[in-house]
Image 1 (cartoon, rainbow, N blue to C red):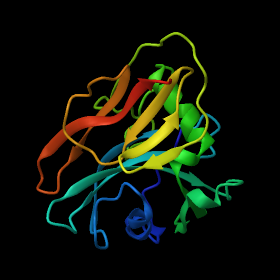
Image 2 (image 1 turned 90 degrees about the vertical axis):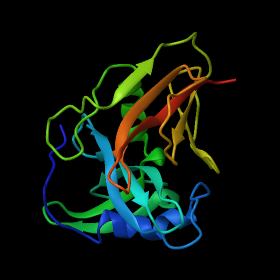
Image 3 (image 1 turned 180 degrees about the vertical axis):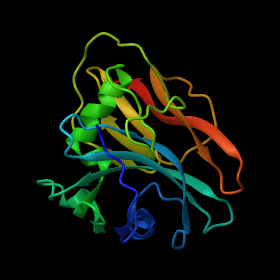
Image 4 (image 1 turned 90 degrees about the horizontal axis):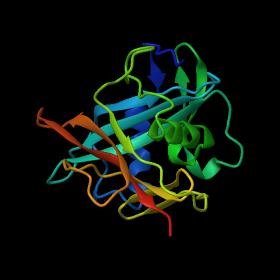
Length: 210
């Protein structure tokens, strides 16, 4: 069970993401981001060592606000062979130095995300300890087994992750309010738009691996 500490983080997550987001192929802006928190959820690491957060941020730097989904993992020591996925380090007011990663490249997040799809774990509230988040909905029906995916790939539309055997997971980095279509499963959740209105749409969709 992850324990949520209401304390300081220096630099903040938004400050780290302001520098990191423009380096991503799916970033839609042309200037430095202007970010605010907009929602998300957490997953628990059964070992209690890695923090896992799926964070939604709004970027209002352009003519049109954009909501991005950024999975993050927080570690007390560097993750081996993951320098390419390091977003930055920060000093946590309780836990000390934390290494913050693009969670799509963290094996602990991948395992727990698959467990969420398969109904083995529940999404947790982003801001409260040991509190399930009922606003996150999951739909997935296992198909015939196929090859297991390996590796994580970014493209202009988002990130492809390995999922249960026979599937590929598309993480929707740029969120759109919609009903997921043409998918064998999905994780859907809400977020707050920059104008204060609420939106709901797919965070992730599941597709057959060919």
